[in-house]
Length: 555
Image 1: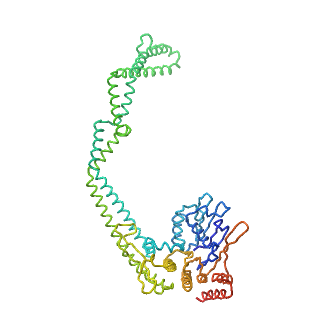
Image 2 (image 1 turned 45 degrees about the vertical axis):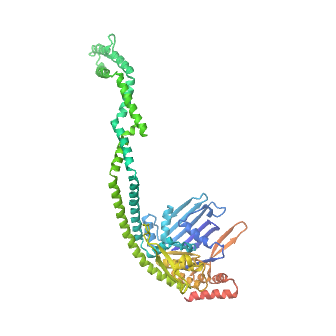
Image 3 (image 1 turned 120 degrees about the horizontal axis):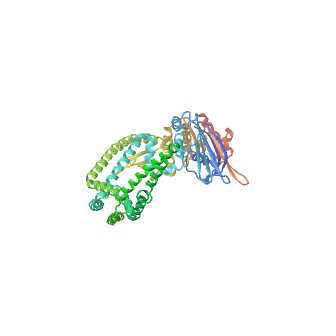
C-alpha cells in the first residue's frame, strides 16, 4: 500500500509530506484548494506524461517521491526481483522533472525507464477519475471494461496474436495479387535486361583486370625502354655491366682471402648478390620477351571497357555491380514466373490463419458472454443500491464485426434502464449526468472489488450524486477500504464521514506566493470540516456532521 508521499515544488505545492494509513482516507477542501494536485503529482510519479509547466513558479525543478509497502503485493515484488530492482518490503519511487522538460526516474534508488515505471505502477495503484464517466460512453471502452472484469488476459493475447498472423498473411496475399496483375509486361522487361547483361558475358573480376591491362598497354613504350635500359646496364653492356663488374670484384678479393680471413663474410655477401642479380636479369629478360606491343590489343581492351561502362549507365548501376544485377534479375524472373503458385500458397496461408483466428475469437466470445451475465447482475444490483430502484443493466452483444479485429469479433454496447416501464437503451443515449455518474461509479466499485491492486484512488468520482445515494457510496467505499487501501477525494459530506482517516487541503496566500497544505484532522476538526461541506459551520450543520460521524462509528 501507499505509505508516504513527498512533493516538492509541484504546481502550488512548495513542500508537502503526507503519511497514509490503511483503510479509507478521505481528502476534502474548498474548491480550488488543490485537492486533486496530490493525485496529479502521484500520477506523474507513476509515469504519467510530465510537463515543465507543472514546476512551481520560481523553482527550477520539482521532485515527487512515493513509498509503498509491498510485503503483501506479490506481483510487484516479483517484477522488482525480475528486473534486479528489489530492495526489501518497501518500494521507493522517485521522479525529478527539470525546467527544460526532462525527467529522471528511479525505483529503489536505481535509474529506470519511463516504461518500467509505468509497468510497475499497474501493480501498485489504480486511479479512478471523474473523466472516466465520459470515456464510459465509447463502445471501445465498454468492451475493455467487460474484458477487465472478466479477467482473461491470456485469451485476449491469443486473439491479438492470431489477428496479427492473419493480417500479415492477408496483406502478403493481397500484395501478391496486385503484383501479379503486372506480371506479363514486367517479366518481358526483366528478361530483356537480363539478356543484355548475359550477352556481354562479363567474367568474374574482368573489369579490374581490364583496367590494369589498359594501364599497362597505354604505357608499353615507356616500359620497354625501361626494361631494355635495365637489362643492358645489368648484363649486356660490352664496356661495363653490373654482372661483369661484380665477378671481377669477387676474383680480386678472393686472391687475398687467405691473408685476410675477415674478407670471408664480404665475399659470401657478394656471392649472394651475384646470384640475386643473375635471377633478376633472367626475370627481366622473360618480361621483356612477353611484352605485347600490338596496338590492336589496346584498342580491343578499350572497346571492351567502353561496352561494359555503357551498359552499366543504361542499367543505372556502377559497372562493378553488373554481375550482381544479373543475379537479382534472375531471382526476380524465377519468382514472377512461378507467381501463380505463390499466390495460391499465400491465399491458403491467409485462409488458414483466419480459421485459427476465428476459432480463438469464438472462444473469447463464449467467455465474454459468461462474464457479461455476471456483470449484468452485479451492475443491476449496484444501480438499485445507488438510488435507481428500477435500474437494470445489460452488456449487449451487437452484430459481429464483418472483418477480424485485434479484440475479436464482438461489438459490445452497454444498455441501461433507469425508470420503470422504460426499455433498455444505450447508455450514451438516455443517461443523465447523475445516472452516468452512478453507472461509472458502480463499474469502478465492481472492478475494484476483484482487483489485486493494493491501493485504489477515487478522484471526485461521486460528482453528480447526493443525499442518500452519497451515503450509500460512502458506505461502499468504506467496505472496500476494509479490504484494501482507499484514497478518496470528495465533495460529499456523507462520503467524507465514512472515511477511517480525514485530510483537509487548505490554500495559503502569502505576500508573494500561494501554497497548499494538508492537515490531518482530529474528531473535532473533522466535525467542523463536514459541517462546512454541509453548507456552514452553524450549530445545525455541526450537529448533522456529528450525527454522520456517529453513524459511521456505529456501523
